[in-house]
Length: 252
Ligand SMILES: Nc1ncnc2c1ncn2[C@@H]1O[C@H](COP(=O)(O)OP(=O)(O)O)[C@@H](O)[C@H]1O
Ligand SMILES: [Mg+2]
Image 1 (cartoon, rainbow, N blue to C red):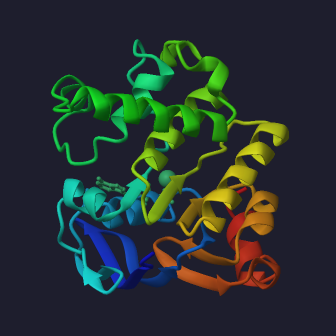
Image 2 (cartoon, protein in one colour; image 1 turned 180 degrees about the horizontal axis):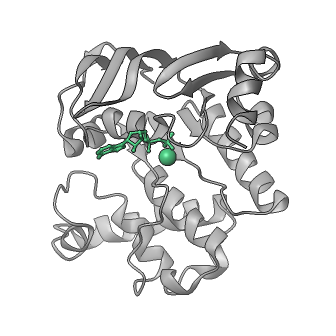
Image 3 (tube, rainbow, N blue to C red; image 1 turned 30 degrees about the vertical axis):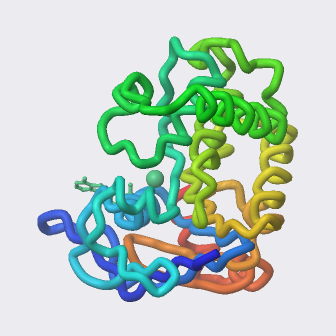
């Protein structure tokens, strides 16, 4: 699968430079961490990768192909999917249907339009349902298949959102604080799922505040502070870097 490369990426909003000259790679078959205090620019990086924001300067490439000026639906079609920091589901639709929406990656209009404008044959729909059920098994969510997504506990809603992103079978999966608000057991289960996805060849970018979680899962970590890279490398090294320690303590 192709890897994702950011080269000297910057984003300004008026007078604020939210992301400044950031370069890193999300290789296939691995988990890369993106960490930093609140306001560091992490979500902005995700919004740049997915085409939601236009780059001020720099390049973003997926497997050598320049995706830096692609529209969000093109980026998704090329194999990059994401989760959001705030959950976005169809609350009244079942868990299974919420996941099936994820298969419809060519749709650029609203999620609901994607669902009801579905132009699929019966055999395609059957295949989608089978694939969705396999994903539910993988995320230990099979027992909730027919439940309305909006009434699930928070941790389970997050899983639905992740399944929807994984349903597209992306080359690159961007996870924006996927285990925030979960307990250690729930986070640990999801960590196992992330490792399985990486083993199957996917490249994951993990934005996360839980340092233990990041250290356990990530081969490399990229640290941002006020939009700039302050450290990068294996977690065992980066987490002991005085610059990183100061950045975290300074905002604690
Ligand atoms: N759409 C926007 N318009 C103006 N400023 C923004 C916008 N999005 C993000 N920012 C600013 O960019 C900076 C980085 O924000 P963000 O990427 O959300 O940080 P993080 O995800 O690391 O907490 C913040 O100062 C934030 O206010
Ligand atoms: Mg954020």
